Length: 263
Image (cartoon, rainbow, N blue to C red; front, side, top):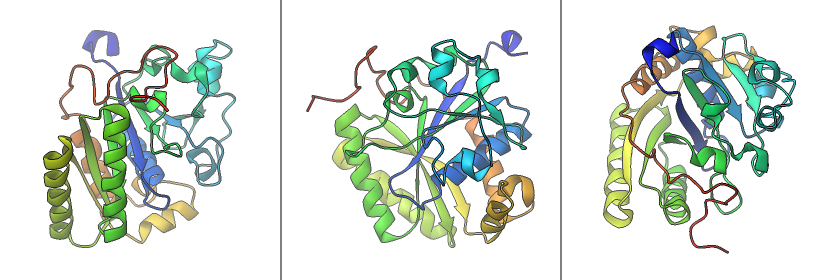
């Protein structure tokens, strides 16, 4: 089907500047929503087997990592674990040189989601730098907004960032979320020349906690809930995001750090 369609694999990195913003939950729910659309989805988890990682939350035990696939010790299908929602999940620990290969060459599905982490200086891994889109998850309160802007500034200077998308999580008032997005877009455009595009927003929803206790996504467990509706809308919109030559970030050189300047 993909050979006939000639559609390249889309790679989307999802990240939050702080813990507890819902970036991992967003990646998992977008993966489940994309599967419902009939997409073949691979979720690369840079959190590894941490307590709040995708593998831990979904109670998965993959047979290998992305490095095993890159070194041809295992195929991607053999290394990854399959979640109940239908998405494949593979740990991809940052800093492992073997994982600097383009993931599109290792897996031929429709969408690769990267549950990305930042290093101690706010930089992306080489793997996440290869994404077509970077989706930054934040919440509509002052601390998260300030942290997001500081993080965008660090990303801009570290990676020559040109564009990213904002996903606003835990929204009680959509109009307030729109204002947050507008303020950040104006400030980033004026002072950093970075284009902030909308990814969408997800409403605050107690069903998210209920789904987590069930080790499932809200998209699967409570499909009529507000958050599930929002995640499905964002997943549907992802197919309409324009493909830009070169992606969001300059591709790091082979074996390089992808860092601007140096240390």
